[in-house]
Length: 424
Image 1: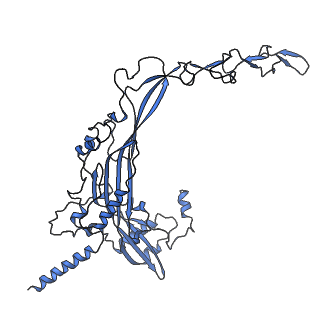
Image 2: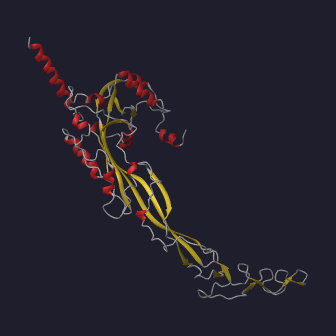
Image 3: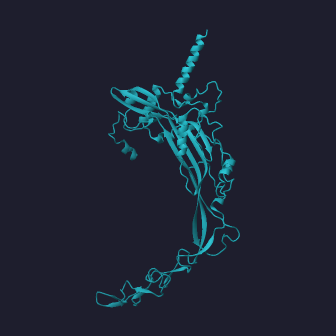
């Protein structure tokens, strides 16, 4: 009576041992960030306290914009399961393995080579599938969303009127500007806006003309000292070369009509006035200067890939754009390494991602960070025919095929890259 029960129990133990043999298999506590994980949600108080450490900064600017982390659009979220569930940890292998049969593998490869103008489908249809290997890849990202503020100066000719100066109210600092109406969605790649700083306008003397409104003519007063000029400077007439007469072939002379026989003409640039109106101040001699705040929001990304030797030849860009499953998704003012109760590898991998945090410019402040770790299912397929063989990869839940170099049925003699570059 007890023998069947023992066999059933032994089969369950063998199944659990088989599942735990995969490096990526984790229990519920390791797959879902638990309440003990620092920075799972970002609260208003956390942002307020974080932004009040150094110089004054309006504490409520970003409060309405903070929300709980959500899975990225190209990744699947893992539903939370109770740690007391009966199938404790048994679901991990189900969502990370791609179960592909021979027909699906051949269809994916045939569809991939169908987009290559000079590749034949005969090997994909007839060669034997020698090996199918799971070599899943872990992708870790740390996104740092920051706000950068810089001050630039803009000038324009001052033509009179009231200015927005410091007479009544002191000038606001760069980080005292309230830009809630301009604030973008968190983790937007890039956004820039320019805002005039209140009470920052001043009137200055034009440096190009020293406040005179005019500058010496560069044509007829090029040899004068700075600030000095001469009027009524005349230049030689180019028609008669200073003679005042135009010589003809019959030996006669006529009065030059260009200079009226004087041999000299006024300066063509200034009319022998000796001065030109200053273009910088438009002749007013004064400039209106104001300070402009250039505010940039951008996301700095740090990405890491941990691949086994079987998938080491696949470029990291393939894994970054592939659809996988999120093992953790945390969002905080400053993210800390994720904690997986039963995976030293994932803990170390998360710490490495956090350690490679992108450097923040001195003119910027961190608003929020988001840390994710995903597993991307990767299947390596080897096909063989006699002594020839080649391998390709099926990456992610979108099942993107990656074939690195060798494919036996190529008839372009190495010209495919040139044809792709020429858009043929």
